[in-house]
Amino acid sequence: MCTAATYRTKDFYFGRTLDYEFSYGEQVAITPRNYCFPFRHLADMPSHYAMIGMAHLEGEYPLYYEAVNEAGLGMAGLNFVGNAYYQACVQDKDNVAQFELIPWILSQCASVGEARRLIGRINITDTRFSEAFVPAQLHWMIADRNECITVEAVREGLQVYANPVGVLTNNPPFNQQMFHLNNYMKLSPKDPQNQFSDRLPLKAYSRGMGAMGLPGDLSSQSRFVRASFVKLHSVSGTDELQSVNQYFHILGSVDQQRGCCEVGSGKYEVTIYTCCCNADKGIYYYTTYGNHQITGICMHDTDLSESRLSTYPLEQGEHILYIPAKI
Image (tube, rainbow, N blue to C red):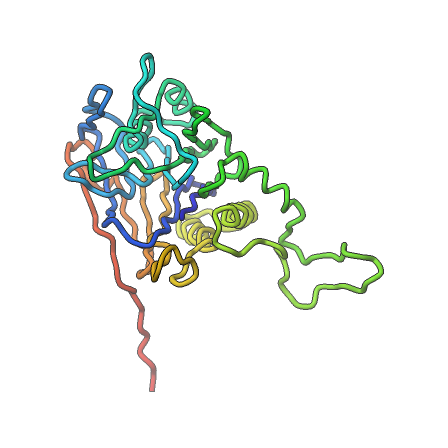
């Protein structure tokens, strides 16, 4: 499935993994300020904040998986199968189709506070993008450098949770993910101490036994615990290279390798891509399953006053630096 996380050093970073058994041909997409977003139940938006993120392109429309806007706000949609529930259109609400939610929020909001106010007026609808696309069952993480929330559309209505860890995976609902952390309150990066029994001479038997008991399986709940622990204990320098490097190591803790998570006969989830967005500078970094070299694209290298999308196919194929052996 997927894992999203925030990270802050000198700058604010936002990103995610996308774990699935196949790719939809996604590309990095920059939506400039004057690209006209058409909305199904609301007026078109001819001007807005520019944004950069990963998207599946249908014609000239970017179906964003995640993105950050030029104001420094980030948003990601993650699978929430079996729990997501969208409504038909209702009166006295801003009716926003599920696939429109990321551009609807990022087009208008510069902060989580502004997003909260906008979300208070919306109804997420089950409107299809087209007959070929069933509405994806998702929940969302929205974050700026100061605050993070999780948004879930469920049968009980639209739920907005404060997200103090800045991490989101898939099921169960976010409040249950957070509650489950209570089971791991004794986790520590330090060597374990004997609390099993004072009648047994138990001791650490090797160097580096920190985080003893941290779950290592690929379930979404275990990934939530693992990514939260790794992020909250992460130590790095504050410059761009050190921060980006550390961010990829944080999400590397939940990387999925082909063969370990079977979802059908001969089908396996893998981490199709991992991304890290410097939300302050508008730089989108990513790696793919087949290419561990970090690729970076800066939205400010394009003309953000334009009206047409800029898209960048993913760099595929492993890039290996060969060092000639000296004779």
